[in-house]
Length: 132
Image 1: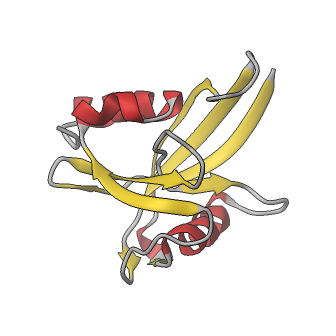
Image 2: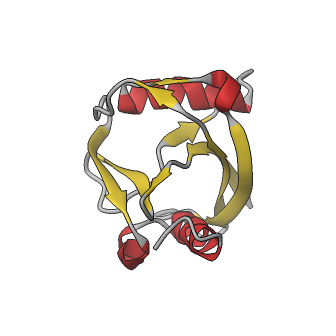
Image 3: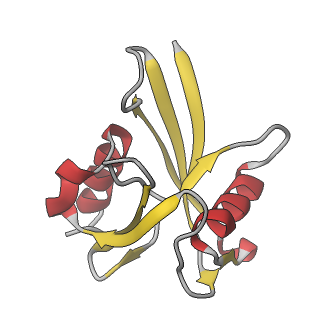
């Protein structure tokens, strides 16, 4: 079994969650990405969100939400995405950058538009009354 280690940001607002779609992809994902060698979760979160959304994470607001795992989309069986999720306040205006094509706010009815691991996270957020 292969594990893809990812860090993600969860931002909810009015029952919706911030999501992104990469160029050439059909599914939406929570913003974030893979850890680089030697990076902490916090380092990865700050770097990835700046690279993808052009905003700065206020590091003193980073709060662990949970870790979720599922089969990786478009990957061989047994390739698992482990998504460690945090919430945080950001400064700046959300602007898609680098590989990100679209930034959207999704709600629970958009479940069929997201990756397998994000479906688990959407259900968690719905159960916790953060996503409608």
